[in-house]
Length: 344
Ligand code: FEH
Ligand code: ZN
Ligand code: ZN
Image 1 (tube, rainbow, N blue to C red):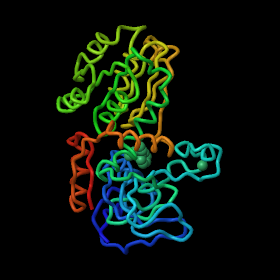
Image 2: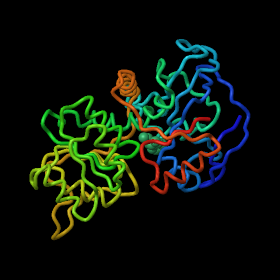
Image 3: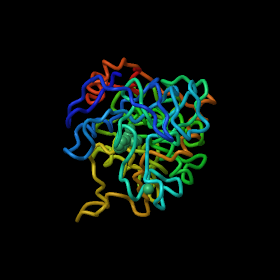
Image 4: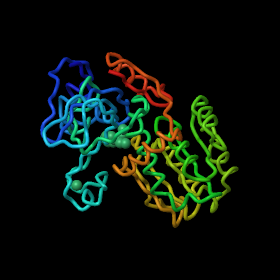
């Protein structure tokens, strides 16, 4: 079968490999759609030894069951499924509570991460990772598993602060941010302030229903403060889907005292919470900062339910498998708005 693999650190190429077979407890999935994620670029750029090589990338997958392995129940050939990408150890305290995104044994394990992923015609996954998606378009189902689940989980973490009439600033209206706006609209009554450098992304946010948009630039902080109020007031919740130093600097200057700042994107920024002499504290007092990671299987089921109710729809741009490297080049150059989806 055709697959797009990291064949050496930083090298992504299409190769021909044997079609894998489903073992006990596993399912062979014909890949219908797989998202191209910024994290794939981090995997490509990671130091030698950080991830297995060769590795078929793709951790945001939806497809159709081809064959099921021994002892698999609840799945039959032809079933359509989304794939929960994380595979924790299954026995630590976090995994036992269903929080495999906090596994205490496997730091970041899963499909397209520590074992072959979905950037291929077929992928083998444990049946426990599958969720039924019914007749949902697979190019819509795939992005739910990461671009949808990750913001959904972050919003769940801030749920108690997202009360009617509060404000939520969403920084970065890309693959995850545009889904966050829809999830906030579908599940809260907050005022949404969308922030991005790109006018097309802000137009998308407006079309989806964001209440205010701010084009990031020299006066970003003042423009946001004009909406959410000056310190010690500010946004009740800030979701940073970029996570680079400039956006973190903006986030900590517009979050209210006692607000919540969720650093979802990790574009290389670290979290300077240590006060520096003669500078204002980097994070307002009493503000809780979280660094959410992906989400849980239970939350993915809720994301799929939102999509099947028509409340969540990814802005999808499709590429055939042989143009997957081009999709990642565009992603790296910041030229993908919405989500790039590869259709093998
Ligand atoms: C995927 C693989 C490895 C690290 C982080 C990620 C995120 O894209 C999950 O949302
Ligand atoms: Zn991802
Ligand atoms: Zn575990």
